[in-house]
Amino acid sequence: MRSDRVKPVHGHAFFTINYSGAFSQILVFDYHDPDRFYYSLLHDDEKYRSTMEGLLASMNQLLSQEEVRVNGEKVEAEALTVNLDFRGEAERPAITFYIEFDGKLKPGEENVYECSYEPGTAEYDYEVYWIFPDGSRIISVKTSTECEIYGGRFLVMWARRGDRYDGYEKIVFTLPPLSSRDKAPSPSRGSSRSLWSS
Image 1 (tube, rainbow, N blue to C red):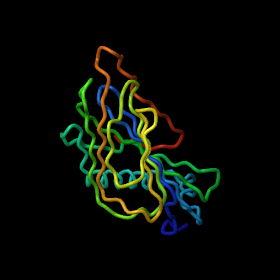
Image 2: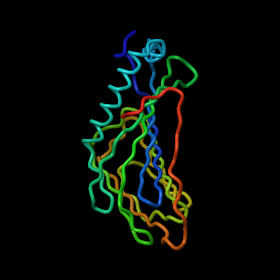
Image 3: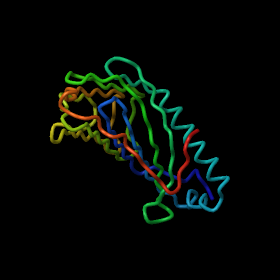
Image 4: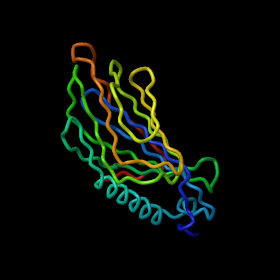
């Protein structure tokens, strides 16, 4: 089984925020795996764990190279879990990461999320979805990719293979004042085949 022939074909990212400033991200990469390398891991627990640990470490290394700021204050994003799934075929694995970071948000006022990272060219199609809490409003978005706002609090950004991106994103948004809402529950997620960091 060869891992060097595994090629990424698509990416998805889903961001959610709660009123207390907890940012949660689910990041999914789809691959074409003609030699069924990832499928073979399901029959070897030790190799599965070492491979997933390596992927989790690599993702956290990538996250450490990004600069994320919430209202001007630098925050640290961390990948907490990695999960292996398949899109109906052994040759179509999907790797999912669960990522978190916390920021100090200002209820009833403008808030700013910024992310700086290495510019480059998209190697595959990808989409990024942002879901803001009920009562929030997205004021402006700065990104080199395509984007669209829906219903005032839903944002979609996307790029296609070969598109250039400049490595900077900025989202300005408001949250409702404390008097107008209750805190949202923290998101939860389970999986049948995952690796949690300690």
